[in-house]
Image (cartoon, rainbow, N blue to C red; front, side):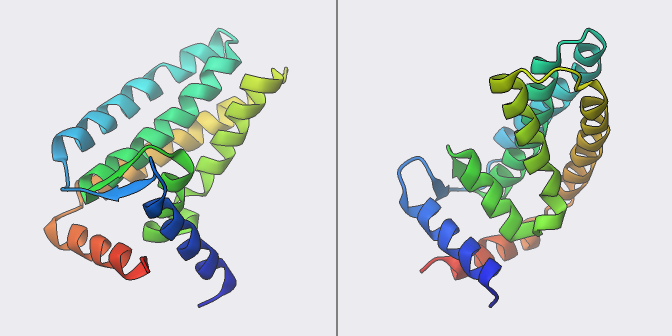
Length: 163
């Protein structure tokens, strides 16, 4: 195992031990579907916010659109999380870092907008809007394809990572 893999495993172990971290539960299709619907609703308002130059809320919605996709996936697999960092790290472990690389970009943009009110970010937000639409579609496809076999395999992978 390389250093990156070791560090991810350590973080995941910590996330399963900390209060409000990760917890194995029964897969919940209803909650999964509701988060995917919420992701779509969140995405539907982003372009209007950018056009209205409400960059703060556009960046927040871009991030949450992506996060709701992640949480929808986790719920379908049977993972409860109250910690965004833990959710994202587990998804990186389960799917691979490349699949969700843009979530870190969306989060950084949200933080910049929310806490530093960076001006002149319209072009970056339009770029992120295109990326989050693709992120949503990729996750929807991945979630829709999750059957019992895939869910079992993900749960085995998680249990194998736990010490």
